[in-house]
Length: 371
Image (cartoon, rainbow, N blue to C red; front, top):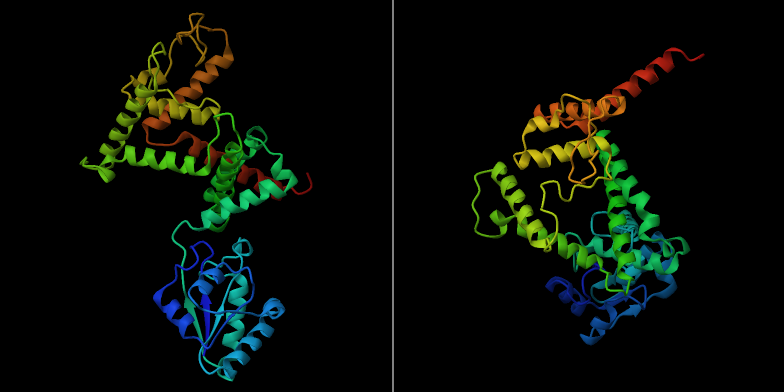
């Protein structure tokens, strides 16, 4: 019998199932392809000797399958093939089934041989926990930062365009209904988080932080803002969850405020660098949750531009009746308020309108190929 023992490079060596340890201790021979396999020191400590195949292990899958089946046929008991190797070689080779591409090719060859050789059994000695591949991403980023000239010279500032671009590409994949592309684009978004955290971890001026600090911060925030899940708060439904969330956020802002700071506002924390339409929608959503009168979102009378504060800096508005740009801006802002009141997301609706327009333009171009 040939036992192909598959272990995860993301699980500490030696943390194997009872069945895996039984197979290793009861094997006539234990074979391995690399002297750098992370399980070898643990096996040696447990008194399990392992033979290194060396060059035979890097042969094509068909040749390796023949070598292993021949060894199993000649042995007086089960032969265990300790699949895999150094953890770094496993990066990016996952098939989603817990085996690498090389291991999958070997198993396919062994299955192809069928009754021509000894019985083959696949034994999973350890398996990844959910999220284990994130460790691969962190480790890969460490390697790239150290060994790739382009990755090594990047800064928060040079990466900023990608931090904006990648989420838009993910959104486009979602709008197109392309789930495979969405999966890929979400990976690009995730990589930006890991990349920025790596850059930050290299600072030694007291402002640095690691990816674990980033993860710990969001976990703490989620636990704090979900007392109905992690504490003894009872809610009647999603609406009350949202109300509690907003109340907790207000308390957090008040706690962070220092003496002498301007009074806290429901608009604190709204990023003004986002696209104008999304900014208007977020400002109005925040204001609505704070019970700000909805008519403030529908300016009337003399034209005035949102954000054109007076000289006092208190957010007062200066009348500019002769400014057509301000009038247009107020009209657009009012349309956002109307959309929100009707339960529509103005950003989504405008993007849909843009796509419809693009479709009409392309149809016209197809109908007039000579133009």
